[in-house]
Length: 562
Figure 1 (spheres, rainbow, N blue to C red):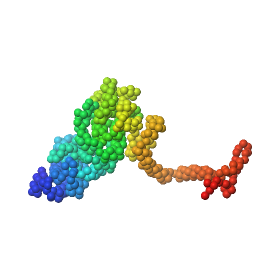
Figure 2: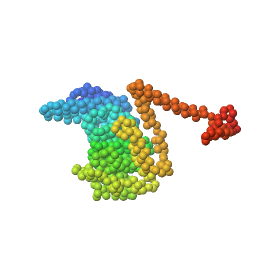
Figure 3: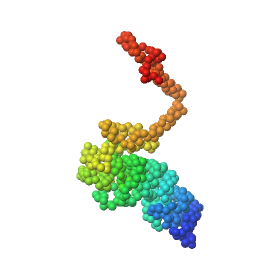
Figure 4: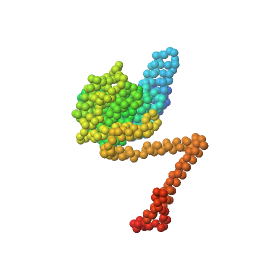
């Protein structure tokens, strides 16, 4: 409190204002001094450390006034450049220290036989420090230009320990904004006009890697971070809760025309987004909130990034989820299978109204109506309710209870949508994560895809019609082949380093024999003289034999002689 009062007096004496030419210079100096002060008092009481962080927040707010708003239309403040990573590095370090202090207090309290009320107060005070740090990080990041926001997100991803760290104890998503500034969730709300600038690959890849971890709360956190980034029109509050929305138009969804940059982003990274939604749906520890966030993810993607091509891809993804739940090749719990079907119903209901296609809306409404009567456990209002009766099995032969690809393709036939692509089943793309985790292997996925394609497209003419630039591009992509080649070389080196000498000798001998046989075949084909052009033959014992003629005596046609 004393430091904050001193700072306010200092600010008033210098007459800080938005148009002051000395704002950048003084802000840089004050920020540096406050960071040093925080390091000096890193073991002080939580209230002191929280007060120092509050002073830092005040400094950032003063420097940001008048030059940085919701949209950055002027060049970024020069004072942000040399101090931005230093600020984040220092704040992240103190955030980790605060968490360690809290965990230490918790472990000592659990090992003690008596619990005092004073120690409980210390734990809540550490939360105050953590919230103050997170608030400052969010406000600081919210006032950076797009390119620096992306760099900061990648920097934070590199600093946050993933394995074995209880980072879900930090309520980073629900922290409110700075009361002197804006009320958005600065901690993760890095909005950008271009999705490619908001989600660069160096940030997108590690974020999605975390989304495949076995901790359901960690997967929820990743989805909430993703919502804050891609929801550029603040629609997620209207979509909260997975449900069958009777009138989507009443939500007054805000949206804009899809830009060329966003179309290019989806062409490049769309399959990656679909893949992680697909894999995230079948996690066995998913709870109600996981399905809620997955529904919101699909809805926001539809609002922000869905053109006609993406709409078809999202429908293919929804049908693939439905088929996965019905086939149940991975023996998922019945709650997960019903939850996936409920998610598909809620999303297709939302999508059909967003694209305003009456036949499509009628097909979706008919399926939902029949489920209400005969299979309520396939709808979100029922399956996610406490003590909802769950069936022992799902009757996949009852076609009326499920969304049919042929019916939806017929509804979307006509200008605008390439409905024929719905006949191509969605199969998640293969990445390096499949070789490092418990996911399906490269060979299994490719063989599955070939099998599905061969069953769904038996006619060669139909297969030829489906070949596009994207399929050709994927066909010549050598990334997977290069990975296989590296793995093969590694196995060969390991074998020659660890295998017994006799085994290596036998292996080399078999290779040499095979090579000798192959060379003998080649020499026999190339050295053996061809038949005589004169056609002179001898017949002996019923066999026809060509007589060999020396090459220099052979006569060739004039056109064959140079």
